[in-house]
Each structure stands twice: as C-alpha cells, then as structure tokens.
Image (cartoon, rainbow, N blue to C red; front, side, top):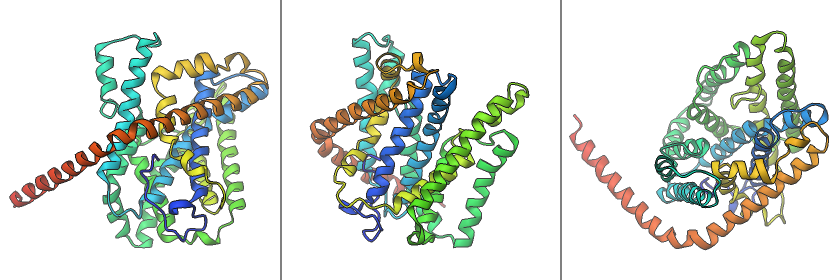
Amino acid sequence: MTGLSAEPAVSAPAAGRGGRETGIELLRILAMLGIMASHFACYGAGGGGAGAGGLWLALLQAGGKLGVDIFVLISGYFLIKAPAVRTEKALRLWAAMFFYSAGLYLLGVGCGLVPFGRMALLEHLMPLCTSRWWFASCYLLLYLLSPFLNRLLGALRREEYLRLLGLGLVFWCLLPCLTGYAIDKGQVGWFVLLYALAGFLRLHCDLSRLRAGRCLGWAAGFVLLAFALYRGFGVLSARWGFLARYSAIAYELTSLPLLLAAVCFLLGFARLSFPRARGILPLARTTFGVYLLHEHDAMRGLLWGRLFSGEALSGSWRVIPWSVFAVCAVFAGCALIEFCRTQLLERWYLAPLGRLAGRLDQALARLTGWVERRLP
C-alpha cells in the first residue's frame, strides 16, 4: 500500500514493471473497491432492505472485512522478503495520514460539514495516536514490526511454521466459529497472523502449480459460504437470539470462510498476468489515499449520506446498478485527488522527510547503543 510493500522477485509468474506483480496490484484495487462497497451498504443504504436489493447489500457488506484481510495478506506476501524497514516510507505513510486527517477536518469545518472543537482539532492533528483510521494505525505498526517478524519467521522450520499458523488459526478463527465468541478483539494480533500466513505461502509453497481459475472459483465459493452463514444465522436469530453472534462472526475479520476466500484470491491473482496493463500499478498506488480520503469522518456523511445515498433504493433491485456506479465514482474521484497530492504536494516534502528519516535512524542507533552499553 502506498508503495510501502517490498518488491517481489522478478521471476514471479506475473511480474510487471518494477518487479511488482500486476495481478496482485489489481487485487489491491479490487480489495479497496470491496471495502468501499461495504461502506456504501452500511452508511449509504442502511445495511438492510428486502428482496434482491437487500440480498445484494448483505453481500456487499462482506467486502469490508474481506478487503482488509486481502490488504494485510498482500503486505505479508511482499514484506516477508524485505531486507529492513525504511524510515522514510513510514514517514510518508504518516504524512499522508496527517494531510488527510487535518486537511479534511479543517475543510469540513469551513464548509459546515462538521462542528469545530479544540479537542477534535487536536485529535485530527494526531491521527496515529488517536487511531483516526484504525486500519492505517495497525498497518503502520505492522510495517515497523515487519523486519523482526521476518527474522523470527525465517528462523522457523517448515514444520514449526505450520504449528504456529495452526495455533493462531485455532484461537482466532476456529474457536470463534464454534463458540460464537472472539478470544481476542484486537486487530494487531490478527494482522500479525495474516502476515505470517502470507509469508509462509511465499517462503515455503510452490505457487507455480496453482491454476488461477480454480483458486478464484474457490474464493467465490468461500465468499458465498460466508454470505449464507451471515444470512442464515440472521434469520434463525429471530427465533433463537443466541445465534445472532454467529451471524456477526461470519462477517468478522477473523471469519474462517472470509480468510480462506482472501487466501484464494491472493493465490489466484498471483498467477494472473497482464502484460499491457500499464495503468494498474499507478492506480494501485492510490488505494491507501483513497481509503484515508473516503473514510474520513468529514467525508463519510457527505459521500454516502448526501451525494451517493442509496437508502431510498435499499429494497429495490435498482440499488444494484446504483451501488456499482457510486462505488466506482467515489473511487475514481478519490484516486484522482490522491494522484494530485502525490504529484503536486508530496514531492515538496520528500527531501525534508528523507533528511528527517536519516536523523531518526541515527538517533535510534545512538540510543540503542547507549542502552546496550549499560545493560548487565
């Protein structure tokens, strides 16, 4: 995301320009579209409705958690072979968060979309500390932890690695699916598990034997399974209330069907090749900015509540084409704004960020050395 992921091997089956796999970059774009579709269903259409429209909106809601899982898997797939964290890239991620957090808040206040408050301003000036975007904060932490995770995971034998993954999947996926209760509701631990899972696929699996069509077929099947569990338990909960928690878990980040779907999507798109798709990589680079922009609290009500509201159509089949248009229009507009930000604004502060990153690296090295010399 935003260029923070490491480059895969040039010999990968779908390697594109710069060594990045164009199939996975396309998956990155589709994952963001899935996240935006879930936001349309929840914020713009009320998440409900009857008939074909209601079923469609319920299906779209799966795109949010599925898209997040896919993004983290992609990061693990790329970063597992990265040599080290680049402080400059971490600062670029933070700078994007600060720009959209503070800038959109001030713009929203100026346009009368959100009320002004001193505490609110302070929170928007510190988007990382206040978790203005929970995913962005968790992702930055995962990126900073990635070199240590790589050393730990790389030292494991294949059998030990499988035991680690099995233990994590039992506690995060299997037990919640069986009991209806989540053991750990935090996201960082789950992100680490997804990172390790993608790393295992990259380090210890021969993906050349996989067929893209079969993987994508399995992925679609797992999505439909999650949808069936979500709707089925939702209907049954009207009579047996305790089943409502099973319906909710079917669409959680840790949902086993959605996890399997995300893995199959990653494997399938890793096997796809787009030799002439030159626009995929530049568009994929905007996805993180698209997320920050459209999910800002000053923009959420404007986009889904006013400009592209689908609540009046939630019970009709017409919500289907409207949702497709709305999501694509919002993505295109946000991608254009993010592209302009990186081309017109980011270049002005890249050099200062680079110098700041160098000073931070030196300060951290001196601090680490000072602590090490004083340890017994």
